[in-house]
Amino acid sequence: MAERTLRGARLGGQSFEDERGIEFAARQQVGYLCPHGHQFEITMSIEAEVPAVWECPRCGAEAESTSGIEREQKVEKPQRTHWDMLLERRSEKELEDILTERLELLRGGEIGPAHLHRSTGRKRKAANA
Image (cartoon, rainbow, N blue to C red; front, top):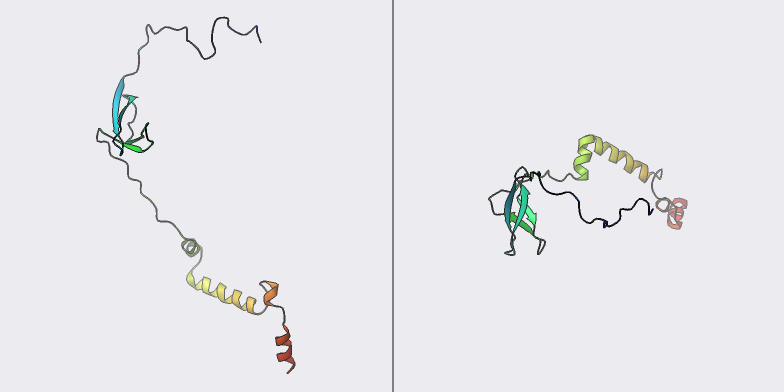
């Protein structure tokens, strides 16, 4: 491991390249104002798409752009219920038929929890009388 280390250089330290001949990207300052009155600026590339909101570095609230950029309003779909999804697969007539069929099976003791179908002493006495 000692053979691969560079003597005199720190890990994550300095770059030995100089800045001569390097053209930096054009930049712009974008101002934001948070609801708590904190104002701040963010440096961004001219080519970057400037967001309408940015998190305030002091309080974490959503700060609005001072350059008049409007928030994009998202179109929200109405929440689908189980009933809505069921109606996509079956008609109400089909559902009524299925319900009637299942209720007959439940009342006849063919389906459902066992405790509903146990014969009690009262039922036996009534049947014998």
